[in-house]
Length: 62
Image (cartoon, rainbow, N blue to C red; front, side, top):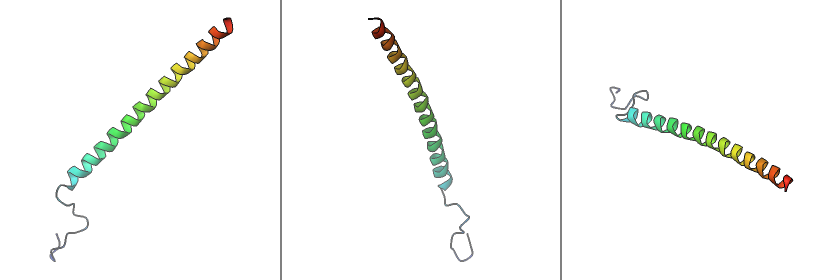
């Protein structure tokens, strides 16, 4: 703190570290969730393509 009693801009307010850490942790978790959802979507789309291909094969033989 400066002598005038004002807070120095570089000085973190009390509790700010835990807030920043929590926010970063939340963002990392959110990013991981997005990646997992993307991977799941890829698997689902592959399964749908396989089903469509199999349906196409079966309908062609009927």
